[in-house]
Length: 219
Image 1: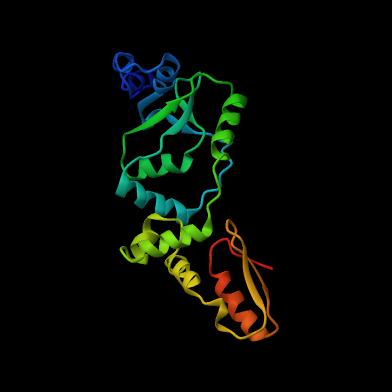
Image 2: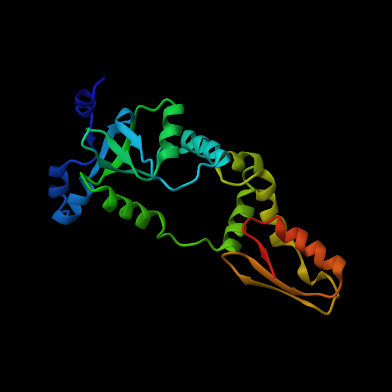
């Protein structure tokens, strides 16, 4: 099917008349009207996409899409050829195609220059808060009481061992040793652990435990 025929299959995600009837301000309605359902055949990945492809994460994403369906939209700009360049989602395009999807929802930024589109993509990708890894560990520990580590690992960017280690670290009693030293979790985002312990055996035991935790750092 040619580009012209494929473009005829594009469907607006929102009805402008319904937005107006609901009293949605014009400037907000204009933003919502950028969202469209488009054929996957019209999408091309950006050659300049700077995200690395991790096959393990791609596999988890594929399982996640099968479980939840599409949740996040893709951000695109229209090219002179009539196709749409995807700024954030080359891996998702690949997963959608492998899963046999035919359509996807996008936010169409229009006929932007490549430079402006790159700027918008970086702005969107890099303005997210970092996780509080202690709270994340608590949540993961709660989830393992309901779901198996194997089940969670299929749709999350962690291995089974890493998922189990979340709970292991939370349950570890750093005060169990009478060392006269101290252990402090200093950075909740990176889980930086400082400790002053003279016994090398105990230090090594703690070090090995903390190294199991994603994003851990020892000082």
